[in-house]
Image (tube, rainbow, N blue to C red; front, side, top):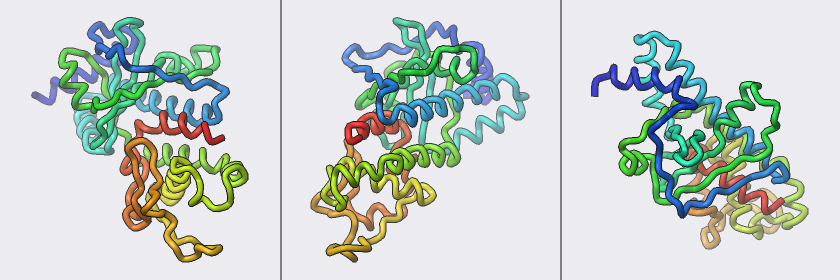
Length: 276
């Protein structure tokens, strides 16, 4: 496809935020989940949603204002960075924007609803507080599959999140654990190896998030288990399809945007709220 075709598509999308006519058909069996203000991690969830929408908006503004030459360089650059894909579509029933997030080697995608409300909140054009975030997990539907299943739909494409975006997300996830760390130890015991496997997963995720987004799991330092690995291979910490087999396997891996796909942030924080 000629380079100019992609360029003009990016130029057109800026005006299409509220007026796309070709839409993606959503499977009727999918269940939309709502995270409300009363959720323990609503603050982190809403911040993540704002980051995603801001990333999308900045891409559209760049596409609208850059010269053709600059835009070619810009598009070529974002196409080569990150493992996360973000695309915008319009719900055919409500005609409201949805942001679909997918990741390399990830069989599922996550759709963020009410992107227009988040956008209005960010721009200051709406005095209504951002009090709910809605999303759904679309299983066995990667971004590539979305393209194949809906070849005729029109989308606008956000930049693949760079290391900076992933690092911000890592601090958001790590901070979510840290904010309730004392509560976890108080409620579930001083020995994290006895915690629920999902909460253990959260703890080790926090480790990597706060070590430059890279896992750095060291042996246990104190108590009767001193010197032993943190992860018990017979009870590996896990969440959904993500499993941490051992300290050695995890160490050195990139966390957010690597082992842990960016689209999983919404459902993960939603689930972790049950431990608070």
